Each structure stands twice: as C-alpha cells, then as structure tokens.
Length: 219
View (tube, rainbow, N blue to C red):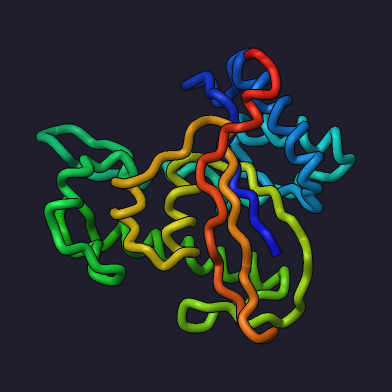
C-alpha cells in the first residue's frame, strides 16, 4: 500500500480557499495523480483541501471521503515570545536543534507542552483506526498486515497536519520533523508500506514535498 500525502494548493487566507495559482497547481497535480493511479481519495474537511482534491476526484471519477481528523492543526500552538503564539510546527529550528529531543520526551521541553502531547496521541489513535481499515494494524512501531493490498490512497491535507502525521508514521521525534522539513502548496509526499516477510510492514518515505508536476506547464 502507498499513501500520497498532499498539501492543498496555494491558499487564499483567511478565506479558506485557493488562489488562482492554487487552482492551477491542483489541476496539474490531478494530471499526475491520474498517471500514478490513485485508487481512493481522502480529504480534510477544510475548503482549501477539498477544492484541491476535487480536480483529482473529477479526473478519476472517484468520491472524496472526508476525514475530519485530517484538518489543519489550528489549535496546536506554542509561545515563542512574550504575548505571542505561533503554530507548533513553526517552531524556531534553533530551539529544537540545540537540545537532545527524544521521540517520547519531546513534550517535556519548552516551548512544547503536555497538551500538545495529548493532541499528538489523539492524532496517532485516528491514524491507527484509518490504517486498520485498510488492513494494517500498528504494533510497536510496525504494522501487522491483516489484508495486504496494492491501494494508492491520496490524502489531501495541510502542512502542519502532514508533517505531524509523517513524524508518527516514520517514528521520528515530532519537533525534529517540524524544525527540519516543510511541505509547499500542492506538494506530494509518498509513503510506502514496505513488507517484511509477508506479515509485517514498515512505512518508508520514497519522496517528500515533490513539486515536479508544476514543471508540466507554466503557472
């Protein structure tokens, strides 16, 4: 099984919509996903993600299945300066890189909080339910293959959510992913569930933040 984790096209904030460029990005992305053969489409309920997904859904004649847990993590915030709050995934990279951040203890290090850890645990639970519906059950960082499949699931979501889900899937400390990576509008990240002996699978990233579809035509 493969996951295509896709950030929506260029956003028009705060309208929760796409700019004209964002619509063109979504059209080019739909051409690419058609060639790749996406077999199912899932989306955040937010309009900028749904608008991006609609182009692919139309080309492939597939329904869009809305997953509320895939919406942007708008209430995941940290304080980085007096009286100022920022999205948690916008943390200053130096704040993270100068510390020994472990996969389990990251929420104990300022500016992160136990509240963020609880939200991350909830995201992990939603992920487990979603993946188990497709035949993969998580056990100690790897996935038991209950029903092997060759599905290619296209997930239309957001930068903060996408990065945080990647941290979970790849077993990387969350702040290290937030500090080290970003997902540009309409970018495509590919995760394959690599089988081990036919019984277990481990998610592996084949490509992160790919924008090569934008070279297909001028924007």
